[in-house]
Length: 600
Image 1 (cartoon, rainbow, N blue to C red):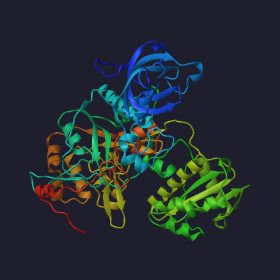
Image 2 (cartoon, rainbow, N blue to C red):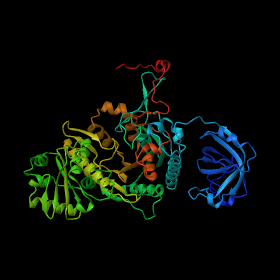
Image 3 (cartoon, one colour):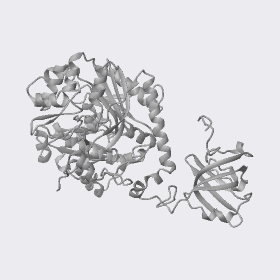
Image 4 (spheres, rainbow, N blue to C red):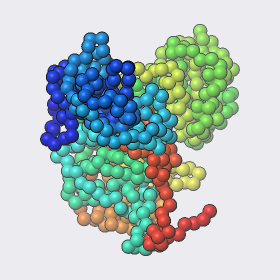
C-alpha cells in the first residue's frame, strides 16, 4: 500500500486489508461492506470487507448500544472509527493478512442498507453462472474478480510501457466506420443523418492502421475495442479488446523480436526468453493445429502413404483421394491404461470436428491386437513404429490411433481433438509454465476445391511471400492455394494470443488479391476505394500484429473462461443478462432512423 500515492480528503484513513502489528495504538477510520456478524453473547464481532481485504471489528470498548448492530444486514456499507489493538494469541488468524490485529470500535454508522442479496459474493456455496451474470455487480465484489480486474489493468499498463519504450505512438481510430472483411459479420449502426446508410463497428482497425503508416506515423499502437458478430466459444466475445500494432520498414525478424519483447514484458519472463519458431506446415503435421499446447508431446504422424493399396479399404480410399489424409498418434502404455469403453468413447471426441470414428490397434510384446490389427502386417507395423520414433515417441507397448478423411483439414482437426483429449485424460500438463510458439509461413488462402474459390486465410491485405510471386499470378487456383504468406501467430498453451502479417504495399499486388477473392473492380472500388487510392501515393513496407488482451489475461489469471476477465461480459448467446441487452428500440427511434422490423 505504501507504493500507492494517496490524497487527503478520503472518508477512510486505511483500507480493510492494510492494518498490521505496526499500526497498534492508532485511531483509524475504515469503510466497507459487512462481510460477517458474530454475536457471542457478551462479545460481538463484525468482519468489514473492501477490495483490499478484511478487518475484524470488536465492540468491547463500544459506548453505543450493541443491540443496534442487529439492524445491520450482510453487504450493508459501514463506516467505523476505532483504535487498532492486538488480538489475543488464541484469536490470531494466520489466514488473514490483518489477522494479528482488530479495531476496537468507538463509532459506527451504516452508510447504505443492503436488502437480502440474491447470493453472497464471498459465500461458501457458489452461485450459478446465470445468477452471477444477472447480478454481475455483486459477483464483482469477490476477491477473485477484483484481483483479475487489477491484473488486467496492470497488463494493459505493461503493454503500453513496453511499446512506449520502443517509441510507439498511441493513436485512436474511429468506432463508427465502414464495413471491412475480417472473417465475421459486422455489427451495423443505422445513420439518422444519412437515411438508408449504416456504419459498421470495426472488427479491427486494419485499414486505418495501414493508412497511418502511409501517413508517416511509423510506429502505431492502440488498446482498442473490436466487434465481431460470430458464434461464441469459451475464448470469444462479441466485443473484445486487442493490443493493435503497426510499424513501418520492418523485417520478419523485427516483428518476431517485437512479439518477444511484448510477451517478455506482459508475462514478466526472464531476460533471455525466446520464442521457438515453427512453420505452419510443421505445426499442422505434428499437432493438427496451428495453436497447439506444446507443454506435452504426443506428436502426430502423417501416414497417408503407408495406406495406399492397403487391404483396409476405408483408409486406402482416403489415401488415394486428392486431398485425403491419414494421421496416426501413438499412446505408450507407460502413460496409463485405456479400457475398451474409453476407446469406444473416442468417436464422441472427434464427432464435433467431422470425424466419423477413430481407428486403432494395440501393440504388446511386438504383437498387434484389437481394432484394425488384422490389416496391420509386420512391415506396416515397423513403418509406423519408425515414424512414431522419429516424431519423438518412445518405443514399446501402447496404442496406435488414427484419424482419416478425404478432407485433410478434418483429419487434422480430429487428430488435434484426440491429442487434447489424451492430454487431459492422462494429466500431461504439469506446473504453471508458459509455452510460447512463433508460428510462421501460413497459407495465404483457404481453397475450396468443390467451388474452386479462394478465401483470405488472414485478411485481404496480407502480403504473399516473394518466392511464391509467380504462383500468385498464375491462372490455376489449385496451385495458387499453395502460396505462402508473410503471416505469423503467437501461440501460448493452446491459445492464439496474437497474430499478424507483413502487408501488401504495392497496388498491383493488392488489385490481384481482390481479383483472386472474387471482387469485381467495382466491388473493390466501392468497399476499398479510399484505401486503393492511398496506396498510389507512396506506401512504405509495413507490418503489424494484434494481441488479444482478453486471452492474455485468461492465461495470466489461469482461467479457461473469457467471461472471468471482462468486467461486464456477454453470455454464449451474446446477451447481457444484467441489462437485458440486446433489446428492441422504441418506435420513435426506429421511425427517426428510417427502418422497419421484418416480421418472421
